[in-house]
Length: 82
Image (cartoon, rainbow, N blue to C red; front, top):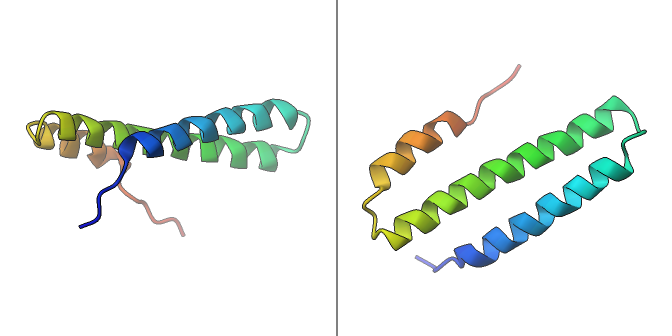
């Protein structure tokens, strides 16, 4: 299994979050659809950051917090809309 640099992923997500914040400020006068899409992307970035942070905690604890991370990420399961 390949090794993943979680710190690099967290840095990328932090920069993406900052860019989305700037975009929300820049496009504040645009339509509601564009703002809703940007807000959705920010929520997804926040969710991804939470998952990465949990994985980083798991690595630092040598897997001791596995039960906790599965319990906490359970609320972020995919949902299907029709």
